[in-house]
Length: 153
Length: 415
Image 1 (cartoon, each protein chain N blue to C red):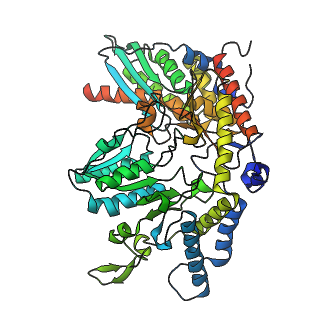
Image 2: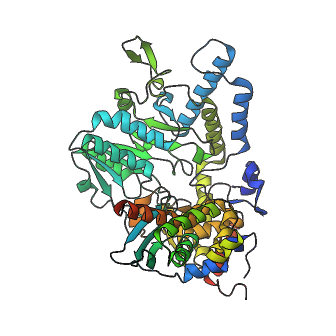
Image 3: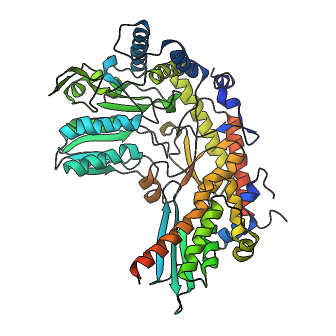
């Protein structure tokens, strides 16, 4: 069934798929990085946990939460994209996603690299929902900031 | 005979479209739409009479003052307030309740005292009392909500004690639609000498309110939920209580005599209305109660009961939907909170919006009720008013079915 009025832009197949079949669902115990995000206006909730390998790259990631399809699909996509990245790279990724969700067009390079993130671009046509898409990413930023505070060199 | 088609013609906004569909406005518990008569009253004030009130001898000031006080009288009559000066204008229910918390509770509630609220309160009738308790050392106690979504009055006489100074309770839940019978609370409160504040934000727009028959000490309401503009509401206070209360805000308009050292207070109600008041919106609120009176509050209530009955029946067609609230329609206002399995309320709201249908999604400013009593992160809520129709309820149901098909059939939808 095809939805009229641009709803298919918002609820792209990839988003619905991540919503119904979330990747990396379930929290890691004693994770190296963790944070919890909550949006009081709609009740969306996301918890993120990540473990680093010896070289300081994310090698395990788990999330948990409840909320709308956009927030939970965004979290699921996030868990795929952070894997294998260093903490610095994760930080850069958050900045990139923020820029994209706040209006910047994705470059072809970014589309190649970030793949499914493109599905979230449709959310931009629904400004009220952008905060749903961003919730997991601001939570990721919190996890990185907290990690940096406790692992200051 | 209540003629909803005629009523709708009085509301210009109802003829607009949203995303190419006729607007179906079902978010009335959040705020109501305004009839032309209210809009005209507001425009007329600013077009012809605007001036500051209670000062100046010029014609406009006299006209503005007369219109403002006439509005107070008319609104007072609507709620059967014995004397106009017992009706204080505020911005809304929240400000009215905060007025009581600051002007009355701060002087009358002490460490060891108790304030009683219910589990279904809107944040505006919960958070101010949390603060009063924090500052004074009083204790906040709860009247529980039962599994049938009515309040548990079975041990009121244990909940209310000689230490209870105030019971602050809603007359209708904005989430569940539960209509709260105030009498048992009043009786229990009188037995222990406690005062009673009734939050009428959700009841005043939808049913006849008589503050003398109710016998409450405080009654708070918002204009914007009852056809008036945003920014005007009111507080009724029983005579003896009002006369003993210290001011809420201090400044201009509320003083009798001021020296550099001290001030004395103006007569009621001005003692509680510091600063230039919201004259235009008060006048528009009086036009709103005139409109409501013309239709008849009992007729409005009957119309909403019929809509609610129809909506609850039709919602049963969708098995994934769970509705919250009393099943007995005599205990329920025109509010239906619901949850659809596997579809988050936020997503329901977005799909419905594309169909031109406005509902509310979230925790409805009653976070503890939604999260720890209904045990859902959020609900979707449709709420009706005097201009809604059965056809609009049907449009809601069809859109909900579409939502269910869409999310329930995500993989197959493009096949």
